[in-house]
Amino acid sequence: MANWRVAAKRADFNAIAQKYKITPVLARIIRNRDIIADADIDKFLHGGIRDLYSPLLLKDMEKAVELLMAKIEQQKKIRIIGDYDIDGICSTYILYRGLCECGAVVDAAIPHRMHDGYGLNEHLIDMAHEAGTDTVLTCDNGIAAYTQIAYANDLGMTVIVTDHHEVPYEEKDGERAYKVPPAYAVVDPKQEDCTYPFPEICGAVVAYKLVLLLLARHFSKEWQEIMESETGYALLELAAFATIGDVMELKDENRIIVKCGLELMKNTRNIGLRALMDVTEIQSQNIKPYTIGFVLGPCLNATGRLDTATNALELFCAADTQSAVQIAGDLKAMNDSRKELTQKGVEEAICLIEENGLLNDKVLVVYLPEVHESLAGIIAGRIREKYGKPTFVLTNAEDGVKGSGRSIEAFHMYDEMTKCKELFTKYGGHKLAAGLSLPKENVVLFRKELNNNCNLTKEDFEEKVLIDVPMPMDYASFQLVEELALLEPFGNGNPKPQFAHKNVKLLSGRILGAHKNVGKYVVAGESGKRFDMMYFGDLEAFNAFLCNKFGEDNVKQIYEGGSCGLAISVVYYPDINEFRGNTSLQMIMKYYQ
Image 1 (cartoon, rainbow, N blue to C red):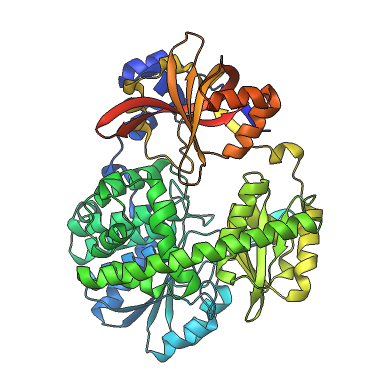
Image 2 (cartoon, rainbow, N blue to C red; image 1 turned 60 degrees about the vertical axis):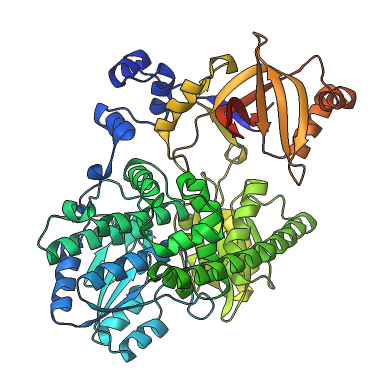
């Protein structure tokens, strides 16, 4: 059962409300997000593009831009090497467009997941060298490519790294010795001596900041002027898209980037993005983080998983609607195929876990030799959601075994992998996600080592439900829903506010949806006032809970015409339902007990 907790953070909510002309409820929610100082509250409520941090605050940024300016002037060939996921694709596009606008001789290479693997490798370095490349510019990768960059140096090429991943380290006597690659410039906010105010940005934002400064120097302008130009706005859209797609926390600068980027996407300047919205039947005026995370983004990821992510890069580079629609249609079709393969893999993983004694493991390591290696991360995420445990999914690859991991908040995946790094031929990642390669003979040992080293407790596995405000539904209103919109965009790191109400009476209910997986109920609070309440979660589990608590006959009455009211406690948020021109207030149930 989930552990419900009411946020007990204190402040003078009435004073905050009065100062910022909001309700005390909203003031309390903002405090629950650890936003305390006046300047931070003001930025949270009213922050805009001018509140973004200067590119110059990133270590080595000046150095990187000066070198690129020199290479552009000398017409030396520059090659961008990105990655095959959403962040890598967006990063590559941002750098490519920025360099093209400066008149650079530039091309881009995105690694093939199957043939090249993640990030830089000797094969990609050789290809760049054979093509006459003078300077390699990485994005969303490179921070862990120490030997590969040293190899590029030996071949006479210059390397600039732009990345956002953790810097590899070796731990001796409790001290960490970080191993920064020997590139000419390394722009990564995770470096120990980088003083950038908010290091939790994605690779595309790092690329965006570099391009802002590069264009500013090229056109002899301030970077703020470039940021508010047509090109700056176009690139901000892609930085926002990547921030959502890479599941970065929507805090501080990220929240502003996403907030502004989503507004720009409503009238997107990118022909390819517009085409992708059209083929997936997304109304641009309604675009949200959910839309990108679960509809548009997976279409980009699918091409890197089942084919080559070059297709997705071509989508963003498309110069006319006809070619953009053709590419977008292909990406959607590929994603539809990926969904079917993923579901089969999830079912196979569940079967293996439950039939082979893995349920007692604190860290799940699932070896699925026949599953397409590109789907390992998605399957790991689904298994993590189902069992609430850190999960690795491994599968056979051309050069041994490859895998991806998805974690829970209490388990720092990269640090835990570092404890048994001798088992891997390659690994990398951060707190909540990671990738790895290892010899087949180390699979069993990997599972054993992770679990032997694991210090997770029973409490770490409990789902924690944080309640912002215990509030009867009677206090919900259209005005409150409109005010809550000031907190948007919602997503990782800035969740939708959650309210709690005890003794809500279920009066009647209907099961809706083509798959009969949505519940719609009439409920009442202590005052007797009635509300519509929707539930989009596991309806089968909810009905089993009701039957166990109240008996099947009473539950049957709810769905057959009404009952005297079965009292439950719910965590909910208020919402506005729009249907055929009519609007009504409804509650969305998230949890129950």
